[in-house]
Length: 430
Image (cartoon, rainbow, N blue to C red):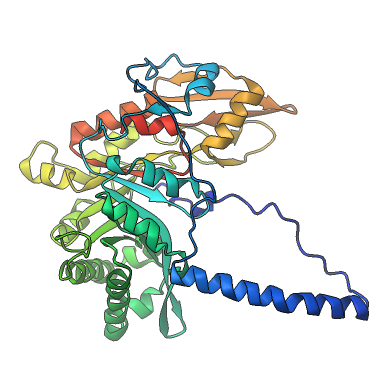
């Protein structure tokens, strides 16, 4: 089973740890004097955040370099690509941002720790049918349920996206203990009410729910009765959301459910399989399939081999070609990564995720030769730093185009993790 999508791709805080050195009494008094107005400022900022008045977008809006021709017309979607070409072209996008090259639904994730995504969502809104800001966690606090993340809400940003035709469906991670959520009828009803109420209050068009990986950790999926109860919770949540109309459209609130991509063709208990899909198909509007994170520091390699993507879809949809399977294909948002990985190949295992900015920096510094992996259908390059060899796998226009073709062949949509991590000209292919 592939590891769950790693929210740890957030950039580390570069600030040094606070000092524990003791200050003399006079310095301590001065520190307390300065601390009072600082606390007042923090409270004011927090109030602005909770009210949605404090924007989480960058202070300066993202600007684009536009050109009359798309990446296809410029001949950039190809296997034989150089670092020099990427560096000279990646910031230039087609001036016709309204043209869609992928006709099926596109779900774009946006994270607070890669704030570029907020502006990219606005700039390319006509290409995105759904936008999911990664804002919420529903947690257990003793016997209470608490929805954390309301301070992330940006009313102006949400309204702008909806005005331009996109559905805003924030992600909620279900962190609540299964013993509280699944066994206690009142708590189950409370959880559903909290989620539906938040959608009503903030004017969302629905939610993206992530819970499967958490339930796997707690052993819920290994017990058939518990698994059934978990699926019934998702089903009841979908029914509750469908009973409410969106304020920005005439449609009911939507529920998109996050599911892992099967590692093997033979499914195990932790996998989300065809029977699970059938259980939820009537009450869930879509499934965000995490076809990325195939490799990791312990097994360096491509992020999403095309053969694995194909097998994942085949295992989930099983009877490809039947009318029943085709209707379910349309419910899948096939996962596409806009991030990459920089793995250590010598000196022990290690490495981790990189963003487009990191990728560009590596190209500028090492001027590597990009190679096309004919098995995974991804580009990669090798470089050495202080005697340590690295392998970098990061999406290119060609690797993305191949995966969009696979989605078209199956009739699925796309889910992009996440648009703040990609290169600007990636949006030309959508």
